[in-house]
Length: 209
Image 1 (tube, rainbow, N blue to C red):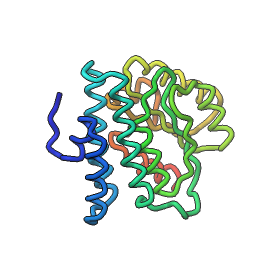
Image 2: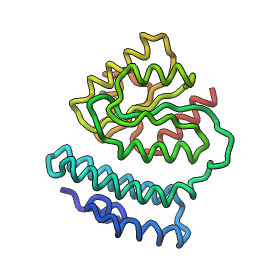
Image 3: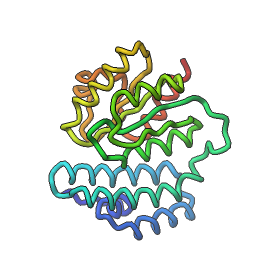
């Protein structure tokens, strides 16, 4: 297991939720930009995902990490802006069928909301038809799919195929701790999110036309 030098990232990775909350409060009070805090949280969550994949962490640790992340993001959300902005557009997001991981997804949801987008969060273990129905209902130009488990890559590919078979031209961004260009090309996605803020970057591109 990797040792993280960044204290907030380390607190998340080590499941020290009280310490993580205190560090977030200290940084907000000290004037640290919210997105910088999010990047530290993301680093910690990336390590949690790596430990899960390696078999060092199990579902119970994922749940604990998720609770720590939720507490931290509850503090950060009011500082991310966009709460009173007019929505810039609808984005559908969810974790693919067979995967109950929502840690990274929740960060992305918060960032997209902070950037002024209306996010339709479908949750976890989302079947392909639910993605398709939500895209149709909201006429969403962008859909995000999160995955942590390598065994769920076929489900991601099947979902994107179902979207295309439905005649939808919605752009697809995928994210997860092992997602790379090879995975993107294999499943037929348009973008990959290496960091949580990539979702905002690509959303801005898509909605700019």
